[in-house]
Length: 634
Image (tube, rainbow, N blue to C red):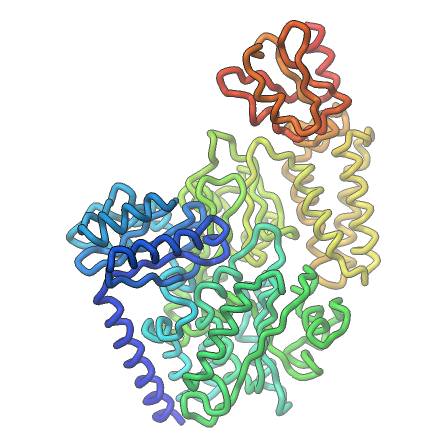
């Protein structure tokens, strides 16, 4: 089996490299066309590049790639022209595209004043270096995202893609399992369970039919790491899934992808078909006796189906609700057969570990959490996007060095890490290293990789209420603690944010109920749902107390505890911007020509505050509402 599979693969790689070498002889334009790029206007940018190249009669090719991670700079394009380093240009519009085609592709002027970075700096432009974030990022599973065509398998093969699979087919399954165990690869779906132990449990089962499932049911608000990977480099996930199947003896694999990810589903289906055509899936993989194939299953979008047993129930046509364990899925899972279920990112690491060895993987990160962490860095941060950093990187480095800090000179307040079931950590926790154990000790969790940055304008009570409302709605209702407990907690938070709660004793009740729900729930949705409340009570109790004892929202965020007021001494009679911005006509002109707000009509949409010109800054938010009487009497 071994020699045949190696020769088969080497032939595939040789043809792929020849194809890519031919491509490099002409100018290439790589356009980020993942969901984030399209949302920012990349479709129009791609059309403009193609049109201008055709009009100029140029022998250049436009290739639509995935997400490069720099989502804040979309639409993005990389221009690779022989004789020049590949240059990345961001914030593209049609006029800039036309200039780049004319000046760079036609006249050899790279317009480097518009270039964000040289992807491969050389002697021509030695001053070009990567973004400041490059000193902290270490892309290993995102390495090719945004730089290869996700719908052309040869792009991946030319980058050593499927080399690990060819190597694995020369090894006994026990040796593959030993390598994954030695690497201490911990699952990136949130729990951090050792992948090697899970695989070995499945391998030990004597069943002739086993399954492997990739969990791409990414439902956290603000998280899109898995989607970006599937849209940008699906073959690395597929290769990891096939290797897992070989190691445990599985006969069939599945991608469980939520239906809200249509582009990811389409990209994965194309990748699977191309893998079959190349002999990398099917009855005789790489000419060997190993047979395995993969299908795509579309989930309906229930957050609880990210839990393993709920996901399997969903695939079997049952209600997507968790089941008691044991047995674990590795013993009895899909259709009652041994099943290995891992996250997208977990499978991505597998080919790299096989190719480079367990020691290489353990040289990255920390002893207890080797490898990297992939996050979507979103919220109140200057440069949001998808980032990959070594485990052990601190939250401060991630937010300030990679994300380049808080915009608009605002003050950092907290970071919500680990998705809606994660925790809110304050400024004092910024030097906590990012790894499974350190975050858990701080009261948060690694989760699947969502990270939301919050600033001084965010109310921590309101944030806790927002995330709890999400998990409460997504509860399957099976557990009394989760079904009713989260509802009672949400009622308490609604009363606090509305200024209706006047008894500080409710905070002790809230704490006790949250702890009981964590202990009494069956699955991790219920066990972790109280985390935002528990961590905000732990680190921001003073904000809860201000809401209750003073009827005041310190962050001026809770609508029931704020009013909008136009300061007469700042208002200009000649300006009517705020009047036009109000959707309910609550702003009127007084007899003296100044503006005022009808409090009975005001819906507190914040439009007037945003619209008021900075030279006037006349619109003011007040909390508690009683302060309005003080201002009006002045």
